[in-house]
Image (cartoon, rainbow, N blue to C red; front, side, top):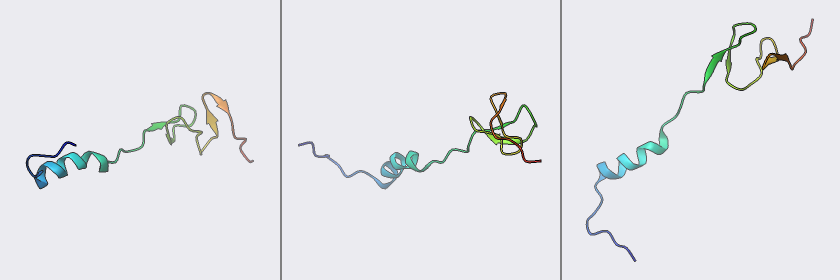
Length: 60
């Protein structure tokens, strides 16, 4: 069984663990139809268009 020869320092331990807690901002893009900001690869909440097609019918 592998056993460490020396104690792992707090700095080394925390540096290794820091990558786990990094959060990424969501990919936000503009809707080509209405220009409203929306999440990438999702239907626009404002106009209901995705990939050039109206997916959600708008209420009049």
